[in-house]
Length: 248
Image (cartoon, rainbow, N blue to C red; front, top):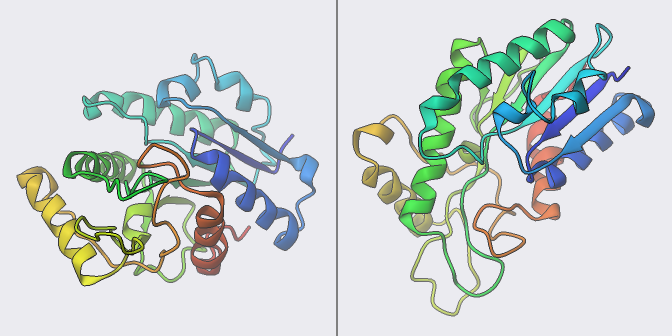
């Protein structure tokens, strides 16, 4: 039995540990009552019948108090095809852990590669906005409340979607030359607006928020979207936990 179940794709490798540490240190959950597992993966793999479902199925019980999901970054171009797997997964989690709060962490934005300028191009950033929008839409149908930069307290919500892109400060932007990359500047927000405008009607409902998360400036590797450990810890400890996201 696990009181807390944390699972997801490759980015959960950095988001999962600080979430687990918070439950252990602040909620008094024994480490052996936290199930934590991750793998580069899709919704279908974690849903019942998928290859990764057995990794979490046995941990889900009536006593489980929270299930933290980190999925969505690996959605492919046909985004709407994932709806049935999202619903299947959420329904299964609710069935096997009926008393658990469901916390779904959305995909982080594309920023820059680990070295050099190498700022994420419009296409890469636009795709992250699309994935985030699709997840918000389908999870809204499943009664998830969205936690955004403007959300102060979600302690009463049984199902929560963390809009990580909205929490981000925005950027970095092209044209930085040899100066250190920055996020949250007027140029960064202008670039985010340009990204959204390039998506046409599909992204018309999205908007950059100039959120508080400023430590995620570049990736930990040669991908545009792999969050460094210190930046993930900052988001969890300083920007999500104070909003009572992990309150049991």
